[in-house]
Length: 214
Image 1 (cartoon, rainbow, N blue to C red):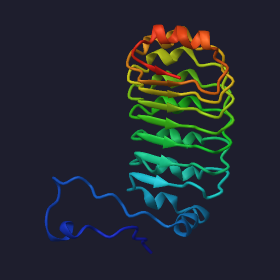
Image 2 (image 1 turned 30 degrees about the vertical axis):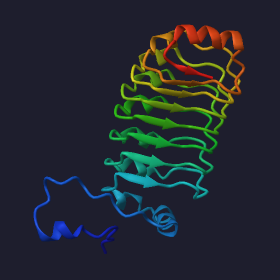
Image 3 (image 1 turned 90 degrees about the vertical axis):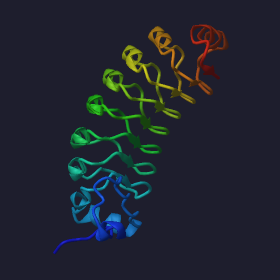
Image 4 (image 1 turned 180 degrees about the vertical axis):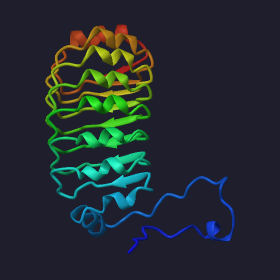
């Protein structure tokens, strides 16, 4: 028995639409998504480019997630997830990943394989540090890390030449790596609620004169 997720666009039924951009799939309701997870049918969503698995009270991400090769945006926020499975390393088209309000204790090194990732949001987790592979994301524009337990950043962050927004609010970090000064495209550096002193913030304002630092 085949499962049809979304209807074809009317124009697709009437003629060739090879030159048209793909139509976004319809949003699945929560009951349907939970059914797919419970019965191991997540792989049936292989054509999806966007998938929202937020607020489903899941503790582990189904391993079949690694078979959704077309995924460009994945939302896993407001769950009880403690780790990201190795299978997620195969999501090479991923552009946006949101894992806010979970229980992540570490970010795996395979994040460096997400070469197209532009936004990574890990707000409200249990992270203490980041892997050095975070510096292997050439397209990363936004890195949101508020409300974690981060005390330091890897020096590899210097390679994030396209980074525009670095949100570190409400972490116990005191000092930033000097390599951060190389990120001259940085638009916003949010240090509110951290242990970075006023003197240190003023120093960084001189090192990054075109960056909003607060």
